[in-house]
Structure formats: C-alpha cells, structure tokens
Image (cartoon, rainbow, N blue to C red; front, side):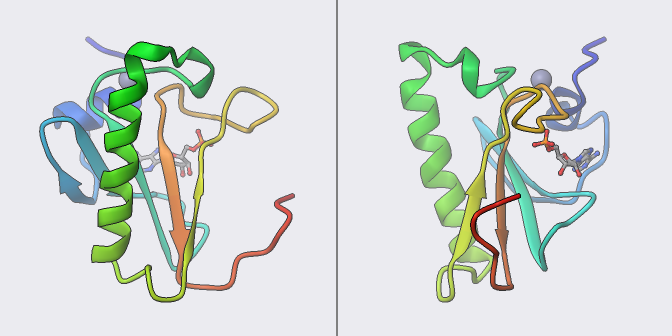
Length: 114
Ligand code: AMP
Ligand code: ZN
C-alpha cells in the first residue's frame, strides 16, 4: 500500500474535502486552515518536493499553476487577492512529502512570513 498521505487522498482511500479534481490534479481544503480559505493543490503523480523538480516536470508545474489560479477564481479569491505557498524541506516547514501548493486567502495576509 502507498504510505504517502496525499497519494492516498488522490486514490480516494482517505477522505478529503475535494473542491476540484481532474486527470492530473486534485484541490482539497486544508484540514488545519490558516486563513478563511485555505486549500491545497497537488499533482496526482508523486513528486516529493520542490527540490526534486527537473525539466521533465515543467509542463506539469505549469498546468498546476493554471489549475490553482482557476480554482482560486472559483473560490472568489481573485478580487481581493491571495497567496501561494510551497514549503520545501525542513527549514521550509514541509510536513507532507508530496508536493503541494497552499492557496490562502479571505483575509489580509502578513508580510514577510515568519
Ligand atoms: P506542509 O507543512 O507544507 O507540508 O503542509 C501540509 C498541510 O497538509 C498542512 O497545512 C496540513 O494541515 C495539511 N494536511 C495534513 N493532513 C491533511 C488531510 N488529511 N487533509 C487535508 N489537509 C491535510
Ligand atoms: Zn505521494
């Protein structure tokens, strides 16, 4: 069995509050939201981290960005704005080793991040 939490969500074996899915990507609400709207966009295929990206992932990452933008618009975030975050590795505070884009919005977000 695949031990990766987000692979298991993508496979449907762990429930999630899914707001978008297609052949390549899934968007679902974060279980511990840090803003009024906080969802994650993941590729179905397992990529562990930003630090593992290579040229072969360029098209996937481009389509992931377009998908996240579209879902943010569907969630009504485009008028006031929002933030994308991808944590990577220990210093980046990544806790789930399956690449995911956080989309946060619905309140003014502080800068710089802590
Ligand atoms: P990161 O720290 O960037 O790896 O982010 C992992 C995110 O996944 C955190 O914001 C968690 O709250 C979220 N998370 C963990 N488990 C689940 C789950 N089962 N469903 C939805 N979000 C989750
Ligand atoms: Zn995975």
